[in-house]
Every structure is written in C-alpha cells, then in structure tokens.
Image 1 (cartoon, rainbow, N blue to C red):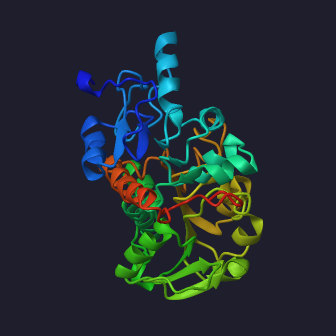
Image 2 (cartoon, rainbow, N blue to C red):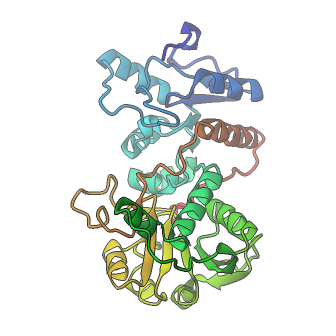
Length: 364
C-alpha cells in the first residue's frame, strides 16, 4: 500500500514542543494515525510507512516476516522508535526489540502492546525491575471480547448440536434415526476467567438462557454471572457443568491449569472451548479426556504451540475443531485498538491511571 509522502518524518530528536512524542512502531493505516493526531493535539504522532513490515491483512501487526529493511531503513526505523516517549506497539511486535529500545531510550515511559495477552510479550522481553518500573506496558484487553465470545458460543453450540456426527453422516450419505440434542438454555456453562473476554462470554451465554458460572479471585460480582466459583474450587465446579469456556491469559499461574485434575472431574460429554491462551490447557490431558469421552467436543482457537505441530493428534481427532488463532480477527480491530489508545493517551497526558496496565509480577 502506498502512503502520502507527508507521512514520512525526520527521525532525529525534534524540538520538544508537544507534551509527548508518540511513535507508531507498526504499519497502522494512515487514517488511524490521523485519528490519534486529531483526538489528542497535545501529542506529536510520528510514523514512516516506508519503514514498516508490509501487512498481509487486517490487524497484521507483525507484518510479513520475509520482508527485510535495507541497512539505511533499519537505522532510520531504530532511530524513530528510540526517540519515543510513547510507543504504539512493540517494535516489529518483538519482545527482544522492546528490551533493546527500553535500554536505548531513557525517555520511554509507555508502550501499547497490540495483543490482549501483551503480558506474555513483556515477560519474554526480560526487563529488570528498574526497567519494569520505568516503562508501563498496556494491553488491548477488551478489544477482542465480542468476536471471541461469539466463537465461544459457536463452539458450545457445535458441541451441543452434535456437529461432528452431523458432518460424518452427511459425508457418508447416512440418514439415521433421530437423536436428542442439548439446548443452551438448559446448560450450565463455566467461564474460566472473567476479564474482558470472559465478561463478554457471560453476557452472550446469559442472553441465550444458560446458567452461567465464572471463576473469581476477588469474589466481586460480575454482570450476567449467576454463580461465582473460587479458582481453587475449579475442579469441583467443573464436575457439575455442561461446558467449560476458557478465557485465561497465559501466565505462570495458568500454565497447564486445565489438566488431569480438572479434566478428570468433568462429567461425560462436557464441551470445552478455549479462546484464551493455549498454554492454559495440558493437551496430553485433553487428548486423554477426549478418548475417554469425558470431553465430548473441544473447540480450540489457540494451542500451546502455534502453529500447531503437524504431528499433534489434535489435528485428526474427530471431536476437535481447530481455528488457527483467527476467531478475534476483524477489520474493526484496528479502530477499536486506536480508540482504546486515544483514551489512554489522554489519561497519560492528564497524569491519570492507564487502563489495562500489565501486572509485572504475574504478567497479565
């Protein structure tokens, strides 16, 4: 995509006329760059579309991995990101580049990550305590809630309505005897994780008439959740529901949380949907639960390793539906992120607390 030459800027340190220098570190479409400028005239918004990795589609923040800058372009890009008070995205969406620019630029104060799970990227950057205290990192939590909640409903529906059996019989041209399907308004759905995505899931399942349970650490009520479940009682709660919807971030505390203890407790035919992070599920335990038909159907938008290795048994399991981490992709994602960023930019300039700041202990 070509861009107006007016978007090409001087990467040397400018006169300090604006209150903050915002550097766009990925190929954000020019109309959205201008939206930031128009919404917050106190900030200087710096970008150069000639220096970014080309996008392959909507919200492709990392860009084409095969693209290589020339040495001059690489120097210009580095100078640009190293001049920021605020970065819109990790440079090239790479944790190592975040660490490099944090150490090169003592002026940097805030980085807006493009992912809802930006905490994992911050952890991977390996910053020390002083660096973590100096530079706030915020995520896009909440931006992806609605499309992921729709996928969660789709996954539970697919399990409740026997999608694998329907497809198998259709391919074989078999018109069998009728069988009973489950109804969402008769199901108990446990949402594991009640952040932005979990709250959106709760709203949609409640609207369909499900009895909604949700895990909590705080104990605070959440709209559309009928029962709160302490996280240390997860296995007991999982034994009394029809579906598990996982929306958790990937942290040390959540890694492998859905393993033999939880999956061994569920009743036969339970539906499992994961729209959080793949690391939350012990995939060997999931396969055992599928073989023993304790999990009747699993819809996975994420896996522990992505892309999913070709040798994984999940690929060929007849009661597993795989999505290549695409359930949240939307052409409106970019604008939603920009609107969140604009709100936080105002907060930053007014010295108010930022939204979605990554916890630097648990990195979520």
